[in-house]
Length: 381
Ligand code: SF4
Image 1: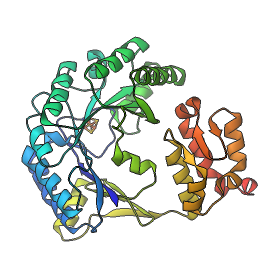
Image 2: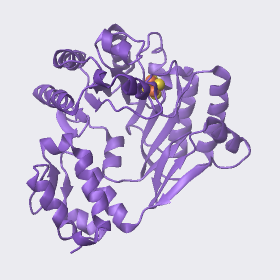
Image 3: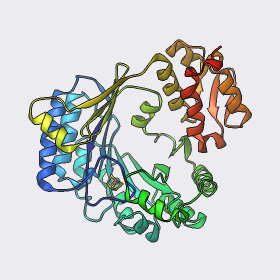
Image 4: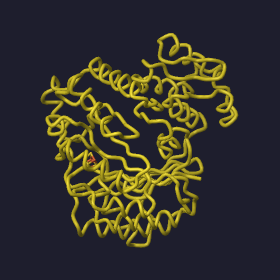
């Protein structure tokens, strides 16, 4: 079984911090892409899908019948069972909710809403055009369409954000009765307008200490409301963890379709071209979309698996991990484990290795230790 991801890369406008594969919606270009995507789905490897995720981009920018066509084609091709988790990312721009009931009729069970903030000023800073009122309408539309789970994505460390405004955003999300909240610290990606802004005016951006305080506030606020902090950036009411993403963190297999989509199948990672022209052109010529492929060394594959599992609240179960990957993790990584434990970033027992609360905020530093350790001779047993 594999998680199936399908990328729908069109948005009503482009946000200045975004570095995803995305383009402003143009009808002719979107129609061409849809034809190519449906061809790719039809020709894809016959894997059995456990979950389906339509991400973007902004899937609800497309005509409803196009989203329904993609849902139906992917469900049929990958034999995705009735009732399996099927997520659709949506943006709360006014007027784009008319098709939600049809998404649900086509199998969607979960809506993931790109909210980012409930503060009007922060929304403008992020280049978003929706209002908090649009979010409420969007979540209500998802509920009345019959969605089993509703997630909101939020961003912290937005320039100008304060503890008070962030807490108001969290409280506003809770007041809507959502089932799942994803909280991402703002990352400034090279090549975006935000990167230029940061070079011009670095003081506009929050420092690590301020960002850590906002992250701590999210944990406190959401846990207090009964949400389980089950992954570094993700919080769920009981029974509402995202199964599709859980599979990534368990180092499970996944198949990504569409421009820029990533796959991990039979030990090979691959990423499709991020050029819309190259993607559509290849498929129209009867070729597969160009992909960059990589097969990890056994050591790198173990490092990756450690990194993914440590993101979760459960952490890494030592026995099952050693069995699955044919290693003795405690022995192989003893110096790194000792360093991280002494720094208060991980906690260990005979059975389990997990991040501490401080380690969750500094997860990239922790992961770097595990990704680089096997290559360092002095760390070998
Ligand atoms: S809506 Fe999402 S995918 Fe589209 S530009 Fe904004 S952040 Fe990027």
